[in-house]
Every structure is written in structure tokens, then in C-alpha cells.
Image (cartoon, helix red, strand yellow):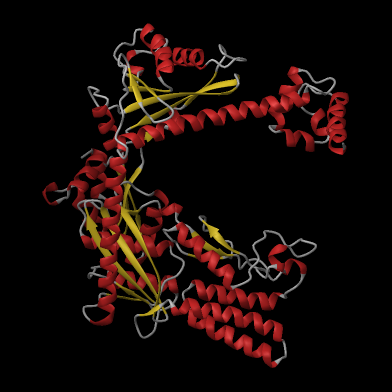
Length: 602
């Protein structure tokens, strides 16, 4: 313990507040709250026998700490939640990647609101629903909403006439004045109720509006409302009644060696309308109570809807404090309960069971991923009889069309996973104009390994090609003095692997993970090479068009390409825009403009 910390410990007040732990670099590593700051902060620096391994590791890194005094414990809780969300300290329990969770946004700040998926929550007057962990399910919900309600999807309301969406009855064309603001607003109200899970309220609202329209002899409008009503009823039929009434969140919790999973069941108006699960990090060595408390603080600090009742799997020390905090956020009474029997307990038990299933699925996925990556690397090393698993592999491929724009790619896999920042691409000079894959391969491996140090070599070099390609590569690699690195050739047709000095290929088992890994590496090398080749070919084609313009030489041609990037942008540019490009002048710009105008009119 440093003298600086010792001095600060003596000055700690016996008041509620938030404490902030920092490391040597001044980075915040932990944020906590306390009813009495003096007692709570000092407890970290006393005997470590009762501390978990995680707390001991954190305390060892503390170089300084700060504290903020608050007026009450609930103020401390609110501040703690906000600081954790802002700084995401290493030693706090946290939702995984909560910044990337999608929300459904209803732009109620616009005259005719839109509904779409977003990952940014702003204080802009719009309504947000979420967060959700499954982005696919969110997009499905949006598709369903668009089937139920003819919402506008365009960003602007300046269209002169309705688009196709109106004619296929998927939009009411507010841009063309086909619907007034009041009627559209009523539909948006139903959309918000539906997103809250209040299908019954939507049904009542639609029924009332349909009957009113019919009484006023607005039969076409009544028919549209009837269709929406029938669609909503179909959705409601799929929802299960679980309790008599009310809005509830039932929370289940499960732990395994993979981590902690929280399952949240959303019950609205007594019906199960959805569920979501969240994975937590930093929970090793923490009690179930600490993990659940941390989850509740973070989840309800960022969620857009708080129900009137929250059902927990275990009792919490801060249960009353959490209920007070949530009631303040909702501006209505929120009950936080731990049911012991009855229907409510059954719902929580079901949520716990679902949380366990999620963890089992995550473990299965993790095992499968390990088999496809690290396991496949070990398996490949065994089949090729290498001294050790080829953790780092580099694969080369050549791409060209009849010798033109010849390029080579080098892709890198480490631990069976692509390492894209290590990829390299090469423009081949030695074989340009004539197809010669052997010469091209000699050039690219020479450029990569000709002057490479021993510690800069991979565990395995893969040449995309048969015996000829392998021989060409070996000639250069061995000639550079790299005698220990294994080099193999991959035949294009059957993924036969040719090794140095062997006439017969190694044939990997048809359904082995090693074969799948080699195929992924080969396909990635081919994709990377063909992408670069197409880029060069596109650039060459653009250049050849500009060759026909009087006054445009190599320098001006390159200047136009660098400035505009594509041929279409050059075609669309005005004379003034082209003349402003470095190296261009007004007569040449006029010539380029006239060339494309004349060509388009032909």
C-alpha cells in the first residue's frame, strides 16, 4: 500500500457515495458504491484472506482512488450505474458488448414517424424499445410490424408522387398527402403499444377505430383497420397466458464454466410476449447475489421500459433500494419480488431452465469452434507429420486473365483463424503480359522470404497449386536458406496435399476438420487474390477509356482517378470540378466532359 493511498484512507468520510479505483496509468479499473465510504473502501486494503482471487488481483493493481459523496444511497446507486456504463471498468461485472445491442426506434419526434433498428440511443425525442441481444429477431419484428401496419420507410417526405410501397399497400404515402397526421399518429400509437407487448390494447384500439370508421361510412378505411386487426389477432393467438394481468419481467440465472447467463422473460398484460438472454463477464469468484445485483443495475439503467413488477430467483440485500431506484426511473411504483411458490415462482423456474439451456448451447458452440480451429490445426500437423502443430500458416495464390494484371495474395491463419491485418497482396512484374504461374510464384515467395529472418517465418507455407507450383516455390525458399520451414502444395481439384520429396500426395479424410481448415485457407487466398485482380482490371479499363481523350496523359489520368475514384464519378463531374483537380486545366476538363457527353448520346 502506497503512502498516497494510506493518507487518503485516513480522510475517508462516513457518508454514502461512490468510490473509483485507478491503476498506475490512471485508468479506472473498478467502480463501487457504499453506504459508508470509510468502512467499504478500507475493507479492500485490510487482510486479504477473505478476499476472492479477483478482488486480490484488483487490489494489487490499485495505485490511487477517488470518491464522490452523495446525499443518499440511492443517489450513489444511480451514479455508480452511470459511471460503470461510461467507463466499463475491467473488474466490474458487465454485460457483454452492451454498447452494440440493437434497439427499435420510433421517430415520434417527426411528423410522420418511422420505425427502424438502431444501435445508438440519443435524447432526440424519439422512443426506443430494447435493448435486444438477437439482431435477427429484431429485424423479424420490424418485418412483422410492416406487415401489420403500413408504415413509411423513406427518410424524406419530399416525394412528388407515391412510390411502389404505396401501390402494393405497404405504405399510406404521407409524402403525397394520402393520410393526415392524426390518423397516422393513431397508427403509431398502436405500433408503440405492440412493441411494449400490449397486444390486447392494440386490439381494442383497432376495433374502436374500425367501428367508428364504419359508422361514418368510411368503408375503405374500416376495411384496412379490419385487416390490421385480424393480423394482430393472429399474433396474439401465439402468445401464452401465464398470469392474470400486469406487466412483469421474470429473471432466471444460471452459471457454468462458460460464464453467467441471465434470461429475462417479458410478460405484458399477463401474456408472455418475448424473452432475451444476456451473458456477463467478470463474474469469476463473485457470489450469485453480487452478479444478479450488478445485472439489474446495468440492464435497467439502459432498458427503455420498466415493468411494474420484477421477479427474481434469489433474495438480494439491496432489493428495497433497487425497487426505490426503479420506481424513481419509471415515475410509478415498481415491486421487486422473490416469489417462493405459485405461478410467479413457476415462471422464474422456467426462466432459470432457459438460462441453463443457453449456457449449454454456448458451450457446445465453443467446443465446435475449438474443433474447427485449434483442433483442426493439431489434426493437420498430425496428418502432415510435422514436428509441432502449424499455429501460423501462410498461403499463396496467383490470379490473372491470360497473363494480364497478374497478382498474388498471401493470407495468414493463426490458431485456425484468419489474421487479416497480416494479409499481403502483390502486383507481379516478372510475368506481366504472359501467363506463367511458376514464374509468378517464384517472384512472390522471393519477395516474402528472400530476406526474411528466421523468427519471421511461419510454421507452414501452403502453395495453392500442384507439384509444379510447389517446386517453383521450394527453389526460392530453400535457396534463401530456409531449410526448416515445411512447404506444401495444394492441388486445386481434390485438395490433395503434395509435400517436399514425396511423389504421392497426402489425402486428408473426407470429413476431417483438417480438410475443412485447408479448404477455408485456400478459398480465402483465392478470394483475396481475385478481389485485388478485379480492382486492378477495373482501374485499367477506366484508364483505357481516358486514353481516347485529347490532352489526357498518364499524369492527368492518374490525377482524375485519385480524385474521383470511379469512372461514374468522372462522368458525373462538371467542367469546373474537373478543372479544379491538380494538373488539370479548363480546356482539358472541357474535353473530358464533352467526350463523355458525346459518348452517352451515341
